[in-house]
Image (cartoon, rainbow, N blue to C red):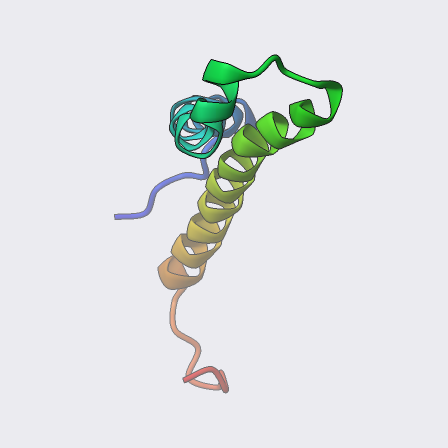
Length: 84
């Protein structure tokens, strides 16, 4: 079964949803105690942003790589190919 590539908009929405969930869990695990007892300083915002940016990037890249693998596997095998 050959699947068509996922449209960009759908990939971005999917990566955003996953980043929201995973980023929130990471933020609570890594920074929850700091958020509960201290005011947030300006330098702390980049750490919070990374808690969401990393899962977003990983999700997007893994989707793109999986689509590339699916396209490669769906091509007819070329007997002259050196990839084995």
